[in-house]
Length: 221
Image (cartoon, rainbow, N blue to C red; front, side):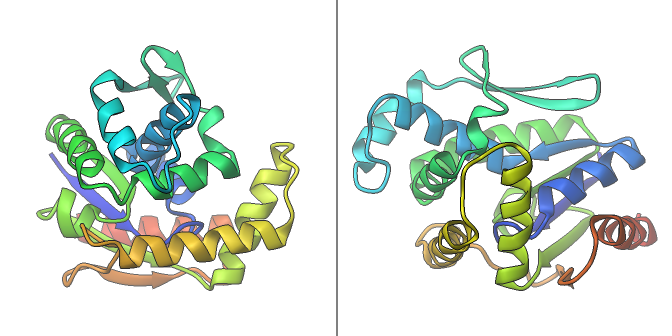
């Protein structure tokens, strides 16, 4: 199987770009962030304070079953059989996802799931520690980034298009928090793998970024 790892901070366009490139290459796209968002959603629904109640989150893990299915080529994420694809994209769940993602037991459960998927499919997988931890032998490794304000503006417009009532300042603050949280966590922090290529998409349109990443991947596979 050919596995491609794309890491980078929140809002760098990893998911959108990886999804588009995977479709063009005929690979499956695995959004690892969606898995952590799903755990975050489960915890929030249970009334667990994801920022402080680590034991509460860990105790919930045996009750969480996550599944990923493709419907007409579109990835859907399921929590215990319920399609939660749209519910996990709110700012509240983004913050919860960042909290639960620093918990070792959560990451271990998600990583096992991610590796199992990669064994059976040519895939593009994006996240924070794909190249450094999940798929250390990936054929291609990319660290995708962009200026913080540029990333926040992209996320803000994305949320507004979905009808979310948010301000740019709120999105920027959330992004800065997630950057710090992801990079400073003790277990498997966000960082560029030694054998990954850094690609900065600041100022690029989506189409430009997709073509850039697709061309880079094709050169190497």
